[in-house]
Amino acid sequence: MISKECYVYISLPERYEPVTAGKLVLETDDRGVNVGRFIYGKSYLARSEAVELDPIELKLSDKVYQTTILKGVFGAIRDASPDFWGRELINRHLGGQADEMEYLLFSPDDRAGALWFGLNQTPPPPKKTFNQMMDLESLQNYADEVLQNIQSEDVNKKQVEKLLLLGTSMGGARPKAVVEHDNNLWVAKFNAPDDYWDNALVEHAMLKLAQKCGLIVAESKVVSVGKKNVLLIKRFDREKAANGYFRSRMISAMTVLKSGDNHVERRNWSYMILAEELRKFSATAKQDAKELFKRMVFNTLISNLDDHPRNHAFIAKNADWKLSPAYDLTPSIPISIERRDLALECGKYGRFANRYNLLSEASRFLLTNEESEKIIDNMYSMVKNSWYSVARSVGVKEMDCEKIKSAFAYEGFNYEL
Ligand SMILES: Nc1ncnc2c1ncn2[C@@H]1O[C@H](COP(=O)(O)OP(=O)(O)O)[C@@H](O)[C@H]1O
Ligand SMILES: [Mg+2]
View 1 (cartoon, rainbow, N blue to C red):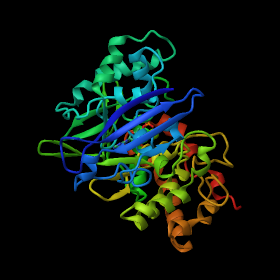
View 2 (spheres, rainbow, N blue to C red):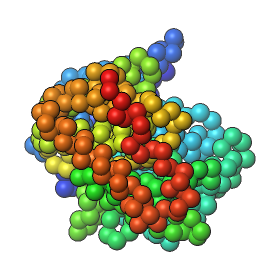
View 3 (cartoon, rainbow, N blue to C red):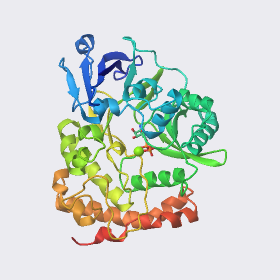
View 4 (tube, rainbow, N blue to C red):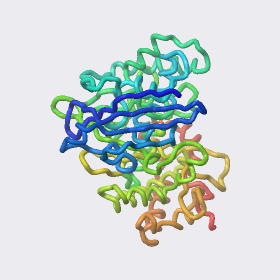
C-alpha cells in the first residue's frame, strides 16, 4: 500500500492570501486500486467566510470524503491539475511518469480556479510577478522544442524547467502559458508545429462568431510573436484588484457530472444531465440551462466535436456558482457529411449533432418548443451566413477558410429523424 498526502489551500473570495482548507490523502493498495480521501480542517470549517471546494461532492462538512473515480482525485481537485501538456512537462522534469500527487505538487501556481497544494500546513504567499508579453517569444520557442521532441528523451532540461517555472499548469492538451497583459491575466495558446491551419486565428474567429450568435464567451485576441500567432484568452477565474489578483473557484462539467474519462464513466456525458445537475447549485439556473442549450447548438453548427466535459466549466467569484463563459471552441472537418457526433449526448438520439435530436429534449433545458426552434433557426442562419466574413475579418487566410468550410452547418444537421 502506498499512501501520499498533501494540504489543500484555497483563496477565499476577495482575499489575496490563501488559507488551508483541508487535507487530501491518495492511497494505492496492493492491487493497484486508488482511493482518495479529503477532510476539511477544523479551523477552516470554523471560519465564517469558508466556502466549499465544490457544490457537488465536497460540501462544507466535517465528514471524511472518499472517492475511487479519477484515480481517487476528487473532481474539483482534478480540475486544478494539469492535463496532457502540463503533465508532459512534469514527467520531463521528474525524469519519469509522475503520479497524481506529483502532478498537483509540481504544477506552478497558475492553475485554474482558487485551489493550491503543498506539503506545509501553512500555504505559501501568492507570487507577485507574472510572465509578460515580451516573454512570449521564448516561451513559444521552448514549447516548440518540447513538442518537436515529444517522443524522444532529448529535450533540453533547461527549457522544460523554464516552462515549468514560468507557469503552464492550466489544463488542456495544447501548449500554453499564462501572461500578464493590460492589467489582466491571459491564457496564451500557442500554435503547434503540426497544426493544419492557424489555430490561434481560427479559434479566435470561433469565439467571435459565438459572441455574434449571442453566447457568453471569454474575451480573446491574437498577437503575433516572432513569425507566429498566439491566441490570448482573458482568464475569467482571475480579477485584478489593488494588490494582486482575486481568484474564483472553478470546476469542470466533468466534476458536475461526477464523471471521468473511461468508457464506463462516460455514460453520463450528457448536456441534458448537465442542465439538470446545474439547476441544483447554480444561482442563475434558468439562464445557465438556456445558455448551455445555445452552446450545444453552436458546437453542432461549427462541428466542435471536442466539446467534452472539461471544455465546460462553472465558476464562483463569491458564494454563488454559475456557468463560465464559453472557451475552447474549435471546428473540425470529419469526412462524413451525413452524421457527426458531439462528445456529449444532446438529445433522445444520443450524440448525433442534428437539429431534430437537439430539439427532442429541449424541455430539460427549461425551454419551450417554440423557444428552442427559434434559437436553432437563428443560429443556423447566423453560422451559415457569417462564419466566413467573421473568419476573414479577424485575419483567417483564404486558404484556411477553404480548409475549415465543411465544418459549418453540415448537411446531416437538417436530416429528419
Ligand atoms: N479564459 C479562461 N479562464 C480561465 N480558465 C480557462 C480559460 N480558458 C481555458 N481555461 C482553462 O484551461 C483549460 C485549457 O484551456 P483550453 O482552451 O481548453 O485548451 P486546450 O485547447 O489545450 O484544451 C480549460 O480546460 C480550462 O480549465
Ligand atoms: Mg480544452
